[in-house]
Image (cartoon, rainbow, N blue to C red; front, top):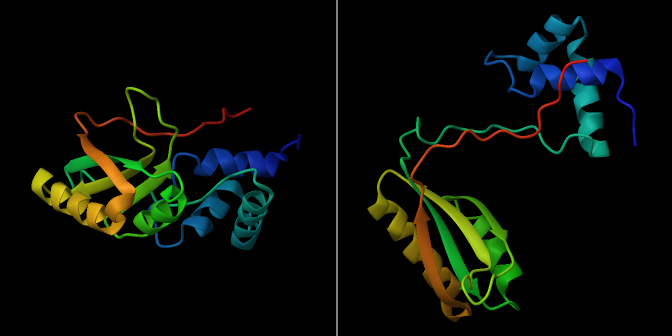
Length: 161
Protein backbone atom coordinates (compact mmCIF):
# COMPACT_ATOMS: atom_id res chain seq x y z
CA UNK A 1 0.00 0.00 0.00
CA UNK A 2 1.40 3.36 -1.04
CA UNK A 3 1.73 6.14 1.54
CA UNK A 4 0.45 9.45 0.26
CA UNK A 5 2.80 12.38 0.20
CA UNK A 6 1.37 15.47 1.88
CA UNK A 7 1.17 17.32 -1.45
CA UNK A 8 -0.84 14.50 -3.02
CA UNK A 9 -3.14 14.38 0.00
CA UNK A 10 -3.67 18.15 -0.30
CA UNK A 11 -4.40 17.79 -4.04
CA UNK A 12 -6.99 15.09 -3.42
CA UNK A 13 -8.60 17.16 -0.70
CA UNK A 14 -8.64 20.27 -2.96
CA UNK A 15 -10.24 18.44 -5.90
CA UNK A 16 -12.56 15.82 -4.40
CA UNK A 17 -15.57 18.16 -4.32
CA UNK A 18 -14.89 19.29 -7.89
CA UNK A 19 -12.57 21.55 -9.79
CA UNK A 20 -12.91 25.33 -9.42
CA UNK A 21 -15.24 26.80 -12.05
CA UNK A 22 -12.66 29.15 -13.52
CA UNK A 23 -10.97 29.27 -16.95
CA UNK A 24 -7.79 27.59 -15.60
CA UNK A 25 -8.81 25.31 -12.71
CA UNK A 26 -5.38 23.68 -12.28
CA UNK A 27 -3.76 27.12 -12.05
CA UNK A 28 -6.26 28.07 -9.34
CA UNK A 29 -5.55 24.88 -7.37
CA UNK A 30 -1.82 25.53 -7.71
CA UNK A 31 -2.28 29.07 -6.41
CA UNK A 32 -4.39 27.84 -3.47
CA UNK A 33 -1.81 25.21 -2.53
CA UNK A 34 1.34 27.23 -3.22
CA UNK A 35 2.42 25.00 -6.10
CA UNK A 36 3.17 25.45 -9.79
CA UNK A 37 0.42 24.55 -12.25
CA UNK A 38 2.66 21.99 -13.98
CA UNK A 39 3.26 20.25 -10.64
CA UNK A 40 -0.50 20.00 -10.06
CA UNK A 41 -1.00 18.48 -13.53
CA UNK A 42 1.98 16.13 -13.21
CA UNK A 43 0.98 14.85 -9.77
CA UNK A 44 -2.66 14.31 -10.78
CA UNK A 45 -1.47 12.48 -13.91
CA UNK A 46 0.82 10.28 -11.84
CA UNK A 47 -2.00 9.46 -9.40
CA UNK A 48 -4.23 8.52 -12.35
CA UNK A 49 -1.51 6.37 -13.94
CA UNK A 50 -0.84 4.54 -10.66
CA UNK A 51 -4.55 3.91 -10.02
CA UNK A 52 -4.53 5.96 -6.83
CA UNK A 53 -7.36 7.99 -8.33
CA UNK A 54 -9.65 6.53 -11.01
CA UNK A 55 -10.66 9.53 -13.03
CA UNK A 56 -10.97 13.26 -13.34
CA UNK A 57 -14.15 14.14 -15.15
CA UNK A 58 -17.18 16.33 -15.35
CA UNK A 59 -20.36 15.22 -13.60
CA UNK A 60 -23.11 17.34 -15.14
CA UNK A 61 -26.39 17.88 -13.34
CA UNK A 62 -28.72 16.61 -16.05
CA UNK A 63 -31.79 17.98 -14.25
CA UNK A 64 -30.41 21.54 -14.46
CA UNK A 65 -29.66 20.92 -18.13
CA UNK A 66 -33.36 20.16 -18.74
CA UNK A 67 -33.15 16.36 -18.83
CA UNK A 68 -35.80 15.58 -16.24
CA UNK A 69 -36.94 12.18 -17.51
CA UNK A 70 -34.30 9.67 -16.53
CA UNK A 71 -34.81 6.01 -17.23
CA UNK A 72 -32.62 3.08 -16.38
CA UNK A 73 -33.33 0.66 -19.17
CA UNK A 74 -32.76 -2.93 -18.13
CA UNK A 75 -32.28 -5.69 -20.67
CA UNK A 76 -32.33 -9.47 -20.78
CA UNK A 77 -29.58 -10.11 -23.32
CA UNK A 78 -28.24 -13.47 -24.43
CA UNK A 79 -25.06 -14.02 -22.41
CA UNK A 80 -22.92 -14.76 -25.46
CA UNK A 81 -23.79 -11.29 -26.89
CA UNK A 82 -24.00 -9.06 -23.82
CA UNK A 83 -20.42 -7.74 -23.82
CA UNK A 84 -20.41 -6.82 -27.51
CA UNK A 85 -23.90 -5.29 -27.34
CA UNK A 86 -23.00 -3.40 -24.16
CA UNK A 87 -20.04 -1.77 -25.91
CA UNK A 88 -22.25 -0.68 -28.81
CA UNK A 89 -25.02 0.64 -26.55
CA UNK A 90 -22.56 2.41 -24.23
CA UNK A 91 -21.16 4.34 -27.21
CA UNK A 92 -24.55 5.81 -28.18
CA UNK A 93 -24.90 9.54 -27.53
CA UNK A 94 -28.11 9.35 -25.45
CA UNK A 95 -26.76 6.68 -23.07
CA UNK A 96 -24.86 8.16 -20.12
CA UNK A 97 -23.65 4.85 -18.77
CA UNK A 98 -24.04 1.19 -19.62
CA UNK A 99 -22.92 -1.84 -17.65
CA UNK A 100 -23.40 -5.55 -17.16
CA UNK A 101 -24.82 -6.97 -13.92
CA UNK A 102 -25.59 -10.53 -12.81
CA UNK A 103 -29.13 -11.79 -13.18
CA UNK A 104 -31.11 -12.58 -10.01
CA UNK A 105 -33.31 -15.40 -11.25
CA UNK A 106 -36.14 -16.14 -11.09
CA UNK A 107 -37.18 -12.59 -10.20
CA UNK A 108 -34.72 -10.44 -12.13
CA UNK A 109 -33.69 -11.68 -15.60
CA UNK A 110 -31.87 -8.49 -16.65
CA UNK A 111 -28.12 -8.46 -17.21
CA UNK A 112 -27.50 -5.20 -19.11
CA UNK A 113 -28.31 -1.73 -17.77
CA UNK A 114 -28.25 1.49 -19.81
CA UNK A 115 -29.19 4.92 -18.40
CA UNK A 116 -31.09 7.14 -20.82
CA UNK A 117 -31.93 10.81 -20.21
CA UNK A 118 -34.57 12.90 -21.93
CA UNK A 119 -36.72 15.97 -21.58
CA UNK A 120 -39.82 13.76 -21.36
CA UNK A 121 -40.69 10.13 -20.76
CA UNK A 122 -41.82 9.92 -24.38
CA UNK A 123 -38.35 10.99 -25.48
CA UNK A 124 -36.73 8.39 -23.23
CA UNK A 125 -39.11 5.71 -24.51
CA UNK A 126 -38.25 6.57 -28.13
CA UNK A 127 -34.53 6.20 -27.33
CA UNK A 128 -35.17 2.87 -25.60
CA UNK A 129 -37.04 1.62 -28.68
CA UNK A 130 -34.00 2.56 -30.80
CA UNK A 131 -31.77 0.60 -28.42
CA UNK A 132 -34.08 -2.42 -28.74
CA UNK A 133 -33.76 -2.28 -32.53
CA UNK A 134 -29.97 -2.20 -32.28
CA UNK A 135 -30.02 -5.22 -29.96
CA UNK A 136 -32.30 -7.20 -32.24
CA UNK A 137 -33.10 -10.81 -31.37
CA UNK A 138 -30.36 -10.97 -28.71
CA UNK A 139 -32.76 -8.97 -26.52
CA UNK A 140 -35.39 -11.19 -24.95
CA UNK A 141 -37.07 -8.61 -22.68
CA UNK A 142 -36.59 -5.13 -21.26
CA UNK A 143 -38.10 -2.54 -18.96
CA UNK A 144 -37.51 1.12 -18.12
CA UNK A 145 -37.24 2.16 -14.49
CA UNK A 146 -37.76 5.90 -14.11
CA UNK A 147 -36.10 8.00 -11.42
CA UNK A 148 -38.48 9.22 -8.75
CA UNK A 149 -36.03 11.29 -6.70
CA UNK A 150 -32.76 13.13 -7.11
CA UNK A 151 -30.07 11.43 -5.06
CA UNK A 152 -26.82 13.14 -4.23
CA UNK A 153 -24.09 11.15 -5.90
CA UNK A 154 -20.65 11.33 -4.36
CA UNK A 155 -17.72 8.99 -4.21
CA UNK A 156 -15.33 8.34 -1.38
CA UNK A 157 -14.27 11.51 0.43
CA UNK A 158 -10.93 11.66 2.19
CA UNK A 159 -10.76 13.55 5.48
CA UNK A 160 -8.12 16.22 5.84
CA UNK A 161 -5.39 15.18 8.25
